[in-house]
Picture 1 (cartoon, rainbow, N blue to C red):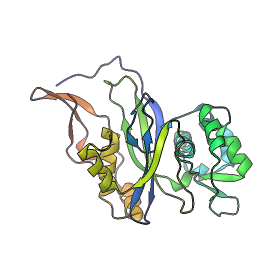
Picture 2: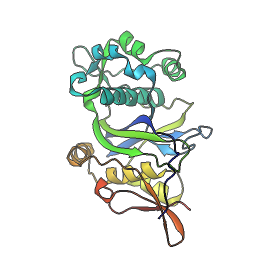
Picture 3: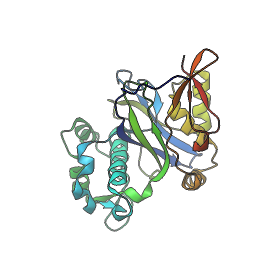
Length: 258
């Protein structure tokens, strides 16, 4: 068995959202990473990214529903996930003070300023006078990049119903395409080589494909024990492989890496 590098960097907190819809069929929102991005370039992924300092602003308490339901870590992660979907796909998971869903088109210039750090996300939410829906996100999975990788992330995968009347649009910077795809079609595209789908994404799409619709998916996620997945590097039959815990819900998985 191969040993992991004890000198590996600590993984950075990150968050992503599996946005689901049932019309015209059960689909998940995925974005294509820009070819010049240094992580998962050109790959089909769920919108998401690492935490920013502003995600921990205590002022979010007045601009987020479900604030009291979560600890500090989960608050930051959920805000980060919602911000990333706003930046990359132009969808804002929020509601007005009267409880009605936010359904406006998200200004691409505003999204770009938030992405570049020229405008704080909380200022956008204040100006819109809406509240982020922290309590609309269910935990789907948690994956930690193995120590063999130069860049490491501790990523929470969340699942949520997509707002019916908001349109997804890529940012043209980190993402160059945004599309709704049936989970089984994503797997077909990956198997045929038509799209690049990295290992963690593909494993979570496989879990998605076990559900018949978004409600079923969210129910399964709620019932499934959360087992952090830290792929382990081993050598089997002269090949390097990644192995993940069998109790994480993915079954017995062995991924050849070389």
